[in-house]
Length: 167
Image 1 (cartoon, rainbow, N blue to C red):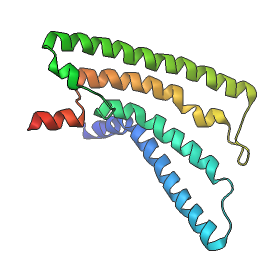
Image 2 (tube, rainbow, N blue to C red; image 1 turned 90 degrees about the horizontal axis):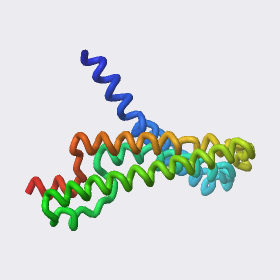
Image 3 (cartoon, rainbow, N blue to C red; image 1 turned 45 degrees about the horizontal axis):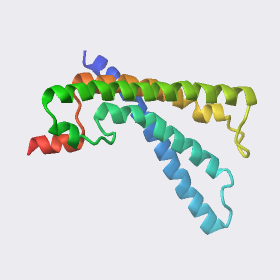
Image 4 (cartoon, helix red, strand yellow; image 1 turned 90 degrees about the vertical axis):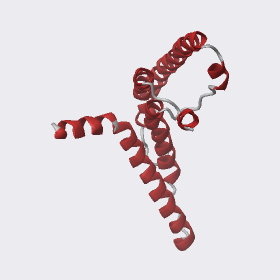
């Protein structure tokens, strides 16, 4: 039973793992790039392309996790001052807006991916297809919606709200 929980935990946090790997690659290659440029006078000409890909993957891979852990920026002060019934109405309204915006971005990202597929566009030095670099976006938007509802159902609160309530 414990082994199944470990597997589920790994699957539930695969986005954080992917973002962490991309961050580690970004840090290591950037550090090595500085050393190579300063010590040997030979910069990695391809480094910028890898940095771009890593940054895109870090942002999109971790976006769903930010919903899951309540780490997205939220201005809750005004809503918290309202009566409970009005707060619930605002929660529903905000949920509709969040899902609509993410769904819109999902549709747009599909269009961009299709454009990259048709054009066959890739990076100049390493010829990494832009489809590979930005292909995480549609997956990320689906995970964002799923994690948003997960956080809503589980009652995940932002760190700031938890801190205020614990005092």
